[in-house]
Image (tube, rainbow, N blue to C red; front, side, top):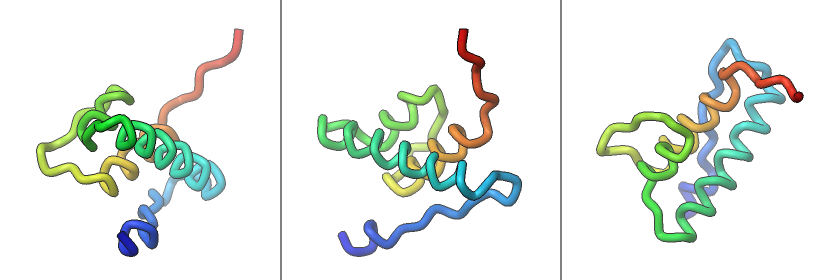
Length: 78
């Protein structure tokens, strides 16, 4: 468990560090909710309309979700 707490996803070089930090926080929170409800890492990745391989663990799920959140174009408010 201590290894999971010290996990720091690697930031892509082309992403603003503040945006990356916020994206990781959102991804961790989403994964925690899915984990609490009995979901799997693959279910967490699928919740964000991403594809994952069968060997996806929670750390990879967090990183994939954070990358998707920080690199997708934002929608404009109406």
